[in-house]
Image (cartoon, rainbow, N blue to C red; front, side, top):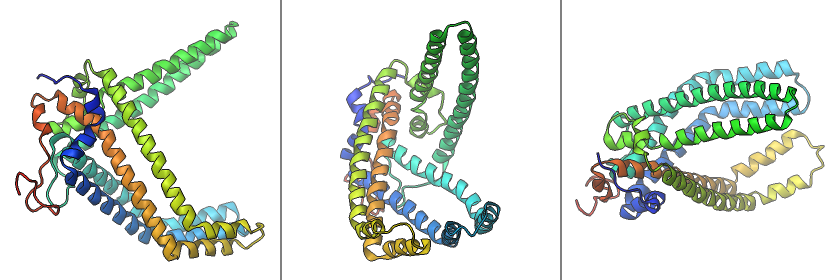
Length: 342
């Protein structure tokens, strides 16, 4: 297999290059993801509303000093108990949703593919991605165990050195251990970062093959990830400021009311004020707008983060030229067929 030369600019801007070739595909995946997550959030809120309202009532009672600690704990269990089944089911379902979303974006970023109608699936790609994420989890757990062992040995070594009057040497030992552990984590993270994209791109389980795929391009990939991370932080900061301004403007009357209180009011009055503000038309519109803007930006940032590994998976492929073709949409797609099919 022959890999193309690593183009740092193309790696950093891979998501935007894909977006320029086929904006409809990215927009459709983003819309579907927003609708899916938003719908699940709303459904979960309505299902859990009895528990939420019960916890609010409990908080009010506890604020009045009418409950002791043991009674409060038993009442919390009583409130949440009927929903334990929902919590148990939400974990595997949430994993399936996450894998379906990850698979859709990686198909778009590595193969230029957008599934018809609903872009999310749970098939071979997603099962293999589950295996890749399990491998990541195993490495993370092994890493935590290794960090604990290293910390213990470093602490013992530092104590022994310090006991001999070498306080500076003990500090230096601790710094060297920290640098070594951080460096090992960084190398593993970058070297194995292309595994999900390679798995989807090649249609086979890939994990340690990512190590080979990053041979000779480790520093370029590290710089690419750092550059993408900086862009994500800028986007996150701008969106955070915008959403805070929207919410601040919507709930300014509530904040002014709260500012006039001296703290002696009944907690129920405060909860009623919050409830009235949230149930108002302005409050609802502001919350929905803040959710759409903030989660929409999160979708873009997730795709940007996946794009570096996707670029390297394409670069490493011996048929890398095929990945630069525009993504295709089938004729039955809600956004219409791609120009080559239309």
